[in-house]
View (spheres, rainbow, N blue to C red):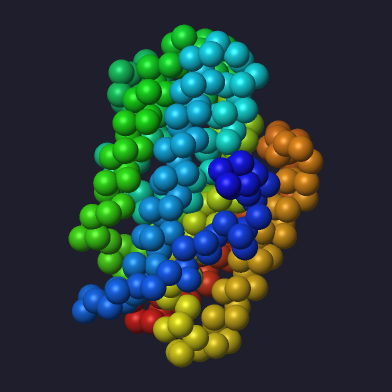
Length: 277
């Protein structure tokens, strides 16, 4: 089962992975849109369990001293958190520990506070220094444990926070990540884009019954926008390994950026229709 999940993470089979948790029953709650919030958090709780396994495999691969195994394990490890990142604003300290890039840290790479995926990325791909990467991989596992706890603390989340996170992440893809700053050394930014989109889609899914009741046209439009975004990325995931972002042409990058803005707009339209401030 895990190997199948891992293939979905890398190949990006969106329909299978993105809605695996949605059929579960959700307990009634008096909070606004509580059912939708429950659907989204259940899905991400499943994703963080996958993330734990992948991070343990990353640590083991780094400890083995095998450069190729470490690179492959890093590639596999990136997808789940890039979906969960939708809610980074609800656990900013944990997000910093897992996914901060050097420009977000005073002192950049020279700071002891720089850690997480991007520290490990630089040590593996740029420096080929697996010994130096090992303690950071072990620390990453501890941060993912903290993330698992945070995703169970429902008081952190609200319909407003859900919408803020979806809008913010979709715009970040188009306005910043498309520049390739996301995976500078591994060249794996396409995995990031695909799973950011999947994460946003999974969190909007719980709102679809209410949205359909307001406007089926808008609900259908949301489905179409997400499908088109994944179609834009699909050609880059057809080989045994994802296409390196440096091989993506300017026009293709532009199409990805437009897809991200289209996702932002449809989420904002859904937010307005549902009157979520």
